[in-house]
Length: 104
Image (cartoon, rainbow, N blue to C red; front, side, top):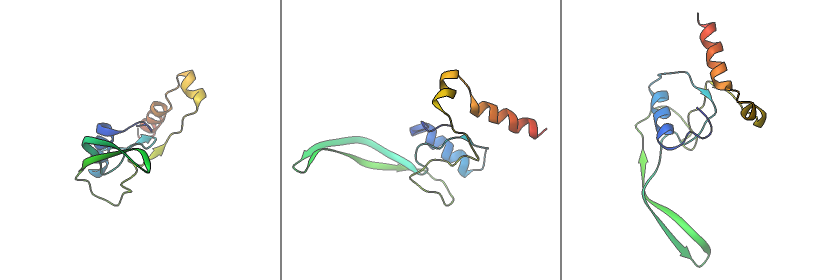
């Protein structure tokens, strides 16, 4: 997972985590308990240039004591640098291989 894991993938990760179905490698993204859904109202107010308001929220049936504003906290945090991305390094995959080799 990575810091760009939002929307449906963040929901999947939250459910997977809530049911203890995996080991998470990478960086956190998205929200743990749900996301704003539905049509968005946009309007101008005298004190604001514009305002975006969602009409309703969606919440996931997840358990545990988690910060709703953060996504799944990885078991193994992997930080990427711009140099890693330019070089095409897949540090998340490397971490997964290392963990798999240790479990043999």
